Length: 324
Image 1 (cartoon, one colour):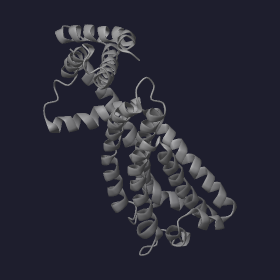
Image 2 (image 1 turned 30 degrees about the horizontal axis):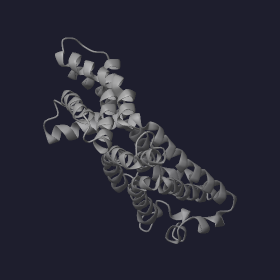
Image 3 (image 1 turned 45 degrees about the horizontal axis):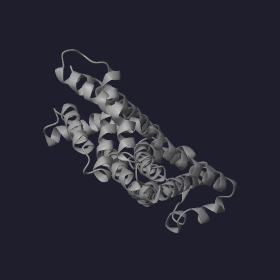
Image 4 (image 1 turned 90 degrees about the vertical axis):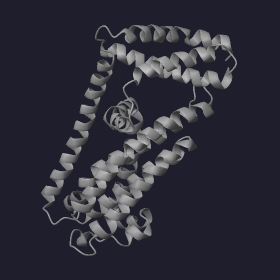
């Protein structure tokens, strides 16, 4: 588009942002969550417009104008974030939750892809257990023995299955994010394939009447681990989607913009992997009842839900407090 079309398309949003910056800077009264949400939306859009303008209209007057507008809005939005520790705390307590809630559709899409693979492989192995050898990698299929689950040294849960699944999931998280650069195709493949592995193992243990035992050794760490995988997958799908459907902007610009957001989603999963690793190292192989393991799984799910709820409330409270 030419410069006149660009300005005409976005001028009204810039004017609204100017008015909000002016009024919010006075801080003479409390503002509603709707006002804060509008400010955040307009700020993000202006930042995108600035990046586009710097690329295609570097010598036009609109570029320094947008630079000044975005700078004012940025200073107003992040004026309290002065220390690295505070920025890290703010990121994990509010910003990550906000980004996660904003991009939840991509996270759900990653989970759906995983479930498609899991259900397909489960049905295949359930109908014929020998399919396990054609579905799973040889190091897993040849080493899995449902009868040895939880029986100490050499048991599947501690020596093979847990290590294999954990390593696989961490690799999937990293490559699922990076796979976004391939328009999300690698991300889709990894989500489905990871589901295939879990589904095939679940079917094998179901065939031997060990489903209850199997899931008891998986879900304590698996609920958090898979949540992290889905978020990483969602990050890759987000980047891939924006490359596939760039809208009014170039794919290069979308890659630069969406890669940053996807990296933030990926970084937000690091504490989840740490917690999952601790649980897998101390709870999963522990000589405790299966019911206790399921209790741990329930607590991890409750903790995740509580984390999101508290983060969402804190995000809204912090945003309103900043402009009081």
